[in-house]
Length: 285
Image (cartoon, rainbow, N blue to C red; front, side, top):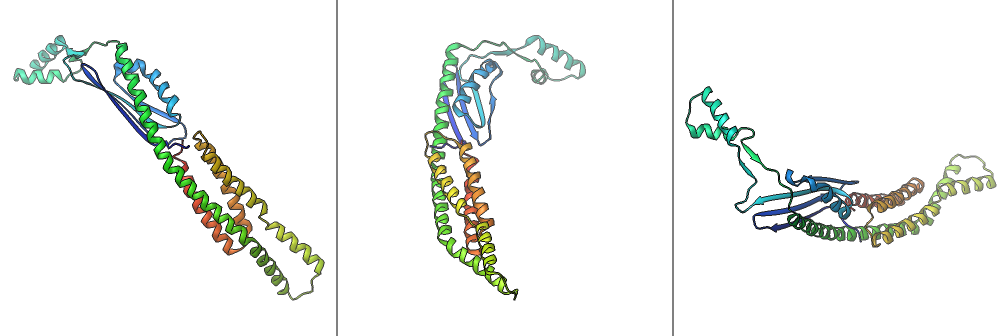
């Protein structure tokens, strides 16, 4: 079953003094492009969390967010009193003003607040890892549901291509007769004597040149291979993309050899269906 690269997962954990939210968003990308946003105090765990996320999501442009909201009285920041008093003293020298106004300005200055960096509590980190695991489950479920929609669309379009190929096969004898008659007419219009044996040899040469038997067989096989790969256990968007290229190659060759307007119209329809498949294929994991 295929998966989409588009997804969203979120999980919130409530601790005694803080609320921690983990969010994961993903879009399509050729490779894994993981962008992480988290408080600086949690950066030491970033590499480990990246490995966990990468092992689960594999491909896609992924935004990982870790947000911390303090809900209790605990805080790691406090006023840097010496710095604030120094700022206020300098401000008084520049211009006289209300003390509260000066204090407000001083608190906005760099280093007015100091934060004591603390190591991450191991129990808290276990909660964070659990939140990441739950968010990954949600985003993978989202990807699977989106993948099912894509799979249904692919199945329908491959069936349409198979029907169009059948129409091409049914039309081929008529096309060959038309090519033969046009060649005979072209020769007759020359109003000259032609060696019958030589003409028949040349006719066979041109009919072989326009023969699409091999292309029809290969196209049918590629369509079957696409369907079997689509229903395999693992999602493999890159492999399906390669098969789509092969399908396109056979369709283009049939179009270039057709030399028959009704068949070329069928080829145009086939190209249109394949183009829609390729557009959707960009989002397959």
